[in-house]
Image: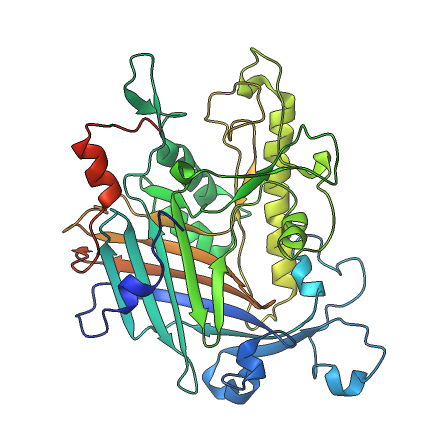
Length: 410
């Protein structure tokens, strides 16, 4: 994690005054009945805290041949079978059984600081029923903008302004009837603001590889990574679900070391002819429409596995990268569609610098590092004044480059 620091910085501030407030928030969790360390150790079980949680329910569509009466979860939600199961994109739901819950977030601590590397990091602590803790952070680079060298050896923006390009989605999402309530409200309140995709450690597949079973993985380079998030829920370490450049189900199976290759027609990529503008490329329009359709499908599948009393209203942001200059090559993000599961929106009055302020919205999808547990966390935050990190180490990389008179162009 070369750019974005882990939890240490914010959670070392236990005695310092709070500098970030969670205005409103909600979490929906799916604890794996077989792999959740939280359940195995008995440190938190939704069934034990029904009076403290908005809603609890079970998901169990397993066909158990032995000990079914012992292993099956009681009163599972009636979602199994039929044409709607298994879910085509959220296939993790069919890999086990889950104890699910939904609760409002009422955090007891929040912090926001500018780290020594220049990243803005915001984090919150939520006390869970029974005294356990859920903590999470998200970080963005306020000055994020990939660079490249021009003909004179001087740095210039690569592919234009990335944040401005991503932020074109805000108005579309605000006016899109498919947007769930939280997403529509966040976009409406953030018009004229900035949208950051938390895309660190996202990856693509080479669409020109000869074999569906051996497509090389292209990890986004460091200078393309705008933000990151991670957390810990009681006993389970969590990481964000990164951007999807192909069918979400294939990403999930690949990351779980299940399944084989990636068929070309499952990759959200359009190759246009040399000289064709991206606006005139029919294949690109197909990619754009397909990613938006998949986003709606994900919304519907997650709504299916939550009760009417506690609906899971979530949809990833489908982005087509159509604002980028197209060069008819697979490398880069031009011509690619992607689904952003984790993001942060800042309202236009935010000043993302030391002494400034920040107001906005976040949507985070966490997958367990060592379990099949999943968490969907959304909220609105306010930072009246952004503080500077006082105890962090010096940014030696920047210092040495400045001493040597070196300016990076990428």
